[in-house]
Length: 423
Image (spheres, rainbow, N blue to C red):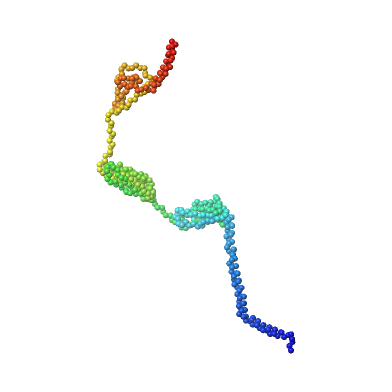
C-alpha cells in the first residue's frame, strides 16, 4: 500500500539516472559540434598574439646602435688641444744617379686640433742614409706656433752621395706638442744608381759653300751678292772674333757684310755676303779669313773667292764744265754818299781835269787795276763840267739848316727896324 505524498521521488530518480547516463556519454565521446567549438577556442588566440607582436618589434628604434660611444670622445679632445697630422707618410724618390738632385717632394703638416701647435725643434732627418737626403725650404719652424686648421710644408730631396749604390732611406721627424704624440715621422726612400759620365763637348764650324765663284763680270761693274752660311755643328759654343779679306785681288771684292761676329750656340747659323767689281780683265781671286775658337782660340778658316773680269773697262761719265760768260761784267750802280750839312768855305780850283765816265768806276776783272772815282771839289754846288756829278735834291740836313736861317731872319728883322728908329 503506497503512501500518499511520496510517489513523486520515483520519477525523479529515474530521470536523474537517465540524465546522468547521457552526460557521461557526452563526456566520453564529444559530438562534432563540441569538437568544432573547442577547436575554434584553440585557434582564435594564435593570430591575435602574432599581429600584436610583429609591429611592436619593427616600430621601436634602438638609439644606442646608431651613435657609437668612441667618436663622441674624440671631438671633445681635439677641440681643446693641438693635433698634428702629416701627409704623405711615405715618399719614394725612385732611381737617381749619384751626386744628382732628384725632383722636389713636399711634405705637409696640418694642425687638425683646436689649440696652437708648437714645434720643439726644426724638421730633421734621422737615421739610415740621412746623408743621401736633404731638407729644402720649409715653413715648419719653431719661431711661431701653428694655429688650428693651418698647415706648413717641408721640401725634401734625394741626392745620393758619391759611391752610394742601391736602396737608401731615412726618416723625416717633426717634434711638437701634439696631443696624439710626438714626433711625427715620414719615411723617405730612394735608389742610388751609377752616375752617367758627362758627354764631351765638341767644337765644329761649317761653311756652305766653302768657295765662292762669281763667274764673268764686265769690268768696273758690280755683281750681285753671293752668300756663305756659317753653322755651328758642334755641341759647344763657337765664338767668331774676326772676318777679313787677305791676298790676291782683294780690292776687286767687297768687304764681307756679316752678322757673324758673335757667339754661336750649337745648331745656330749666321751669314756672310760680298760682291765682285773687277778692275782688270782675266781671273781675279782672294781669300776670306775667319778667326774663331775651333778647336782653340785664334784658329782660322779660309773661304776662297774668285771671279773673271771681261770686256773693256767702261769709262766713267764726266760732267762737262760750265760755259764761261763772255763780255764785260756790267758795273754796279754808283751810290753817292750823303751831302754834308753846310758847304765848306773853300776856293774853287783853278783847273778841273775831265771826270771819267761812270763805267770807269765799275769793278774790273781779276788782274786789271780798278779806277778810282774823282773827288767832287764843291759838294752841294752845281758843276757844269763834262762828266760832273750833279747834286741830287735837298737832304734832310739841308732843309733843317734852311729852316733855322729863316727863323733867325724873322727874329732879327724887327730888332733891326727898332734900332734904326732909335738912331
